[in-house]
Amino acid sequence: MPKARRSNDWGFPRWRGYGSSREATNVRLCDRHGCNEPGDCPAPKSPNSPDRWYFCQAHAAEYNKGWDYFEGLDKEQKEERARAERQESAGYAEASHYGWGGSGDGSRSADEMRALDVLELEADVEFTAIKKAYREKAKLVHPDVKPGDKEAAAEFQKLQVAYEVLKAAEERREWRG
Image (cartoon, rainbow, N blue to C red; front, side, top):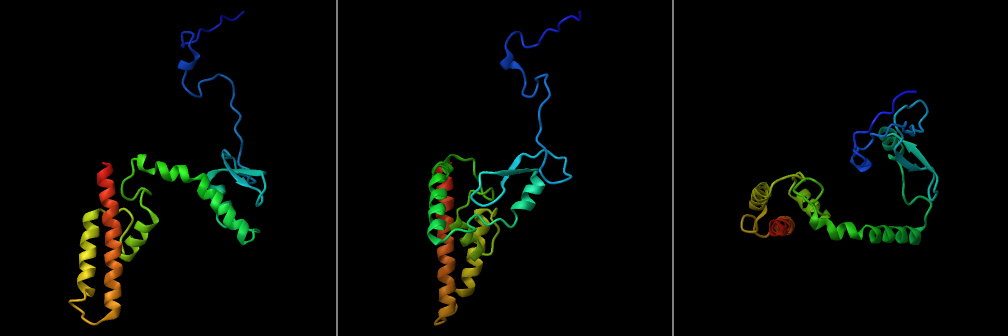
């Protein structure tokens, strides 16, 4: 009779590392024919269906590339689903100020991204570069430089609004610390 091995956890099984159990682990393979990667990304088989495919990350990305979340729904159903999604994710938006967010990591709002597009800047730009780009562009279309030019005046106002949005966002970030 073989001698029983003693465990190294001194009677406290919670001290063991994750995945340190001795039994075999079942791994679901990707549902794509011929793929032997783990299938840990669920994807719906059809719209409004609870059935799922389980793909590896590469095949899930390929499968979802042309996916239309609102396919087959009329306008009211689309609006209802979009409203439900916003309501479901509202908690994430409320808690966004707890994040470690900095520039370029997805912490910029849609308004900030539109303002950066007006200034023709990337999402991860520092505020000093924003200020510099604003000043350079504003000098070109300032009403004192181009008096009576309505297009230049409109462009100058767009630049001003974009800069104000980005300045307010920067002040909020500094205030939060």
